[in-house]
Length: 202
Image (cartoon, rainbow, N blue to C red):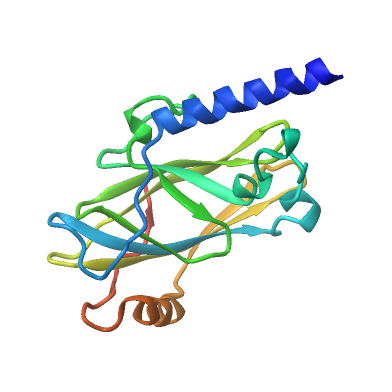
């Protein structure tokens, strides 16, 4: 049993190191003044039904109490690229993941990204923090920032799923008013939050 835990822990560490060395995350927006050629991207991801408490806290103690599975379960990683990906790389070890949009379900995110049309190709979330089993969420969406925009709201993407993690519906919901309130509370009113809702790609 001890050897099993040691092996499992080693595999987890290897997986985490691989993820850290292959995925580059969109940074959180630190201020209203994005760097040249950048802008602030605002949005949210939701699951319907949401994760139950037991799912969020699956394996809460972790291996040797060295990590908190809550840091992985209930979060999602989306490949975001300047060109549409014809096929998503599920190894997550290619340039498709050089600008990964990482967010927590049901929480508004504020990221800094390139000021250009961006394709949201597909997303991955961990179903269980011990097994590290993954579920994939469809993307095939894009947003196009208005000219000279410094911040854009791209919408709330709601994924409806069944008990087996099959996605049965994808909706882009406009919650601009509430997102704008959060944005101004965080960054003030020096810059305007423009609307650039995600659109499904054919």
